[in-house]
Every structure is written in C-alpha cells, then in structure tokens.
Amino acid sequence: MELLSAEQAADLLHLNVKRVQALARGGKLPGRRRGRKWLFERRDLERLLGLSDLGEHPRPGLDISARNQLRCRVLSVTVDGVMAEVLLRVGEQELVSIITRGSAERLGLAAGDEVFALIKSTEVMLGRGAGGP
Image: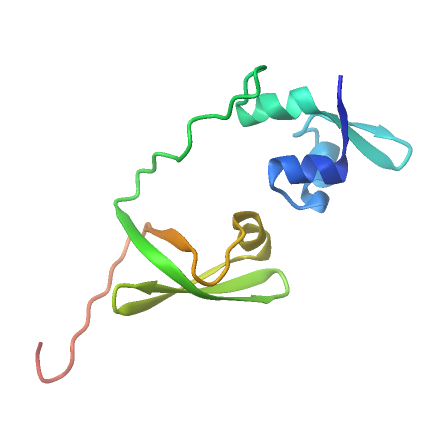
C-alpha cells in the first residue's frame, strides 16, 4: 500500500492541491486525515483515473459530442487571479477563450501549443460589412 500526500495526489490527478483537499473533505475523493495532513492510497486514485493494476493508462483522447471543433495554435496565455485569457490562432483568425487558471495550469498551456477549441452554443450570430460581402 503506497500512501500519497495531498501534493503527490494533486500531481497524479492534475489538480490543484486545495481542490484535492476540498474533494477529500467533501467525501468525493477517497482519503483520510492524519493530524492536519491528508493521505491517499495510490491504488484508489489510479482506480478513479481508470488505470489498471498493471499501470496501463486509459485510452488517450476523449470522444465529444460538440461538432464545432477547431484546431488552434496558442498565441498567448494571460493569467490574472483565478482566470486565464488564452489567445488562439485559427487559420487567419484569432479567438479568445476565458478559462479558469486551474484549467490553464492543468493543461500546461503555453504559446505555440496546438489545442482544440470546442464550441458548443445555442446561438451563432453572423455579420457582414454594410457594403455586402
């Protein structure tokens, strides 16, 4: 039985250590307190991630229902407080995504990275110049 600290569990789960502690306090993550510290069994966390006992990783990628998937290049990441602004290049156009700081850190976003922008919206607005196309 291998026990992990909250910091080690956060690294394994790709989460912020405060989020790991909050999930454990709420009973949503299997862990136990020893004094002021949280401890987690690696086996339990790997089971949650879908890793087998052999240490195999789950199938990479994720099937998503969103049809509007755009391959982008990250131009810049600006972090301010708990939010991050990610400027993306899609062909000749730029797109801005506002995500949480935690998500930007978990994804390890940096200028030059290739990512997918997934757009799911109930409304798409169109416009054109006053003189026509």
